[in-house]
Image (cartoon, rainbow, N blue to C red; front, top):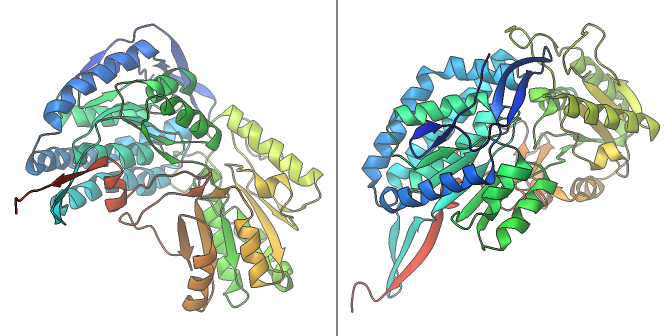
Length: 476
C-alpha cells in the first residue's frame, strides 16, 4: 500500500490538521493501492505562513546558490526516474514505456530548463534614466492536475524555485504518489525549510484556500476552464497574479496538398496519446471534403495499431482512463456523437471486450462530424477523434477558430510557407506544423478560455517575476 498521510510543511513531514483520507485507486485494476490525506484551510494556512517566513531569505539567495540546489534536484530526479515512472503508471494508468520516456522524462526537462534559463538570465538592465529590475513575485500557490502529474508540477515548481519564490503545491488528490516522491527529492536536495511545501487535498477545500489566502501572492493553476474561473474569482479579492493553463479543443487542419495517409495516422496517434487525456490533443481533424473517404480509411487503420493492455507491460501503448468519473464522462460523449448523427468509424461505447475491469475506453473515431455537435465543441479528455470536412482553406480556419478554447493548433501541408500562413490565422497559443516535436524552450499556454499564462523556457520563468523600475541610478 502506498499511503500518503503526511504533508510537507516548513521543511518536515507533518500530520494534517484533520484525519480525512481518500482511497488511491489503480485505474487498471480498480483496486485500492493506498490512501491520501485530504487537507484543510488550516493546513494551507500553516504552509502559507511557512512560505512567507522563508521568502525573506530565499528571495535574496544568489544565482549560484539556487543553481546548486536545482542541480541536486536534477541529480535526485534522474536517480529515481524509473520509480517516478512506475508511480505514475500505478496512480493514473499511463503505460510504463510512456511514463518513462515521456511522463517522467519531460518533467525532468523542466528542472533542466530552469537551470539553463537561470544561468544566463539578466535580472537587471539599464533603461532610460534608471534600471529595470525583475524580482521574485513572492509566495506561489501551485495547483496541478492528474493527467501529467509530474510534468505539470515540475513546469511550475522548477521556475518558481529558480526565480527565488516560495511554494505551496497542491497536486491532484487522484494522483498524489509521484508528487510525494518529488517532495522527497526536493527535501534531500537541501531546499531550506518553508521554501517548498506540499499540501494534498481536493479543489473545493485546499485549492480554494490557496486561491483566497492573503499570504499567497500568485496562483498558477492547470485544470478545467470551469475550475480556473473559480480560482480567478477567489484570487481577485486579494489581487493575486493568476496564471492559468486550462482546457482545449485543438483543430488539426490537414490541407489538400499534405501527405494524407501520413498526416491522418500521425493525427490519430496524437489524439490517443496518454489515453487522450491531454489538454492540447488534436481532437478535431479537419479534412478536405474530397479526401473524406481516404482519410476515414487511414484513421481506421491507425486505430487498429493501438495496443490496449496492462499499463505495466512495456508493449502496451494505451492504458485505462484515470477514474470511473472520467470513464463515465467519455462514454456519455461517445453516446452523444452517435445520437447526433456522426458516423462511427472505429471504437464506440463500452469497455473493450477483452477487459472485465479497469477504466478502459475503446479508441474511437467519428466522421461526418459537424461543428455544432457536442463531440466537436466539448473537451472530451479521452481517446475520441472527431473528423470534420471542409471545402476551402478559409472555412477550415473558421471552423478551427469557432471554439471558446485556444490552447493549440496543428497544420499539415507539404508547403511550409502555406502551413505558416494558416498557423498565423489560428487563434491559439501554440501551433505545430507538420508533426513538429516538443521543444521545452518555447512557450506553452492558451488564448481565450484556454488560459492566460505561459509555461516552459524564459516565458515560464518570467511568470514568477515582478517588474520594478528604479529611476535615477546611476545618478546623472
